[in-house]
Length: 159
Image (cartoon, rainbow, N blue to C red; front, side):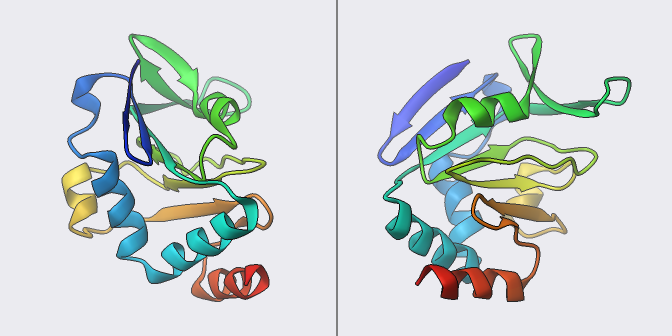
């Protein structure tokens, strides 16, 4: 896996073909185009002192035969659980952004960092232009925040 640092971003790329966008472009898409996400990230960062974003860019895969079902990513021909990557990097940055498909909408968790991920398979170009992709935000102190009401409630609580 190739790891690069650019300012406040640490980018983990399993294969060069797995990403066509910089970490800054991905982050800006998720947070700057969604004011409630941006405000939540700002307030949570202020409260926890965490800074920066770690991005995992990889091909996401899913195996139904495994119990429990497992969301994995491919890294140099090996398959690794996405949750293990989260566990390894939780708390290293304010946000863990998962730039990989989540074919069956499986859930993840973290103890310190915000996690943002797709609920489905997605295409990066379509994602940046807002073509029907659904994303979920996991906040360690509250779980998944799947509505504007839940986001506003947590922003108020953190302020």
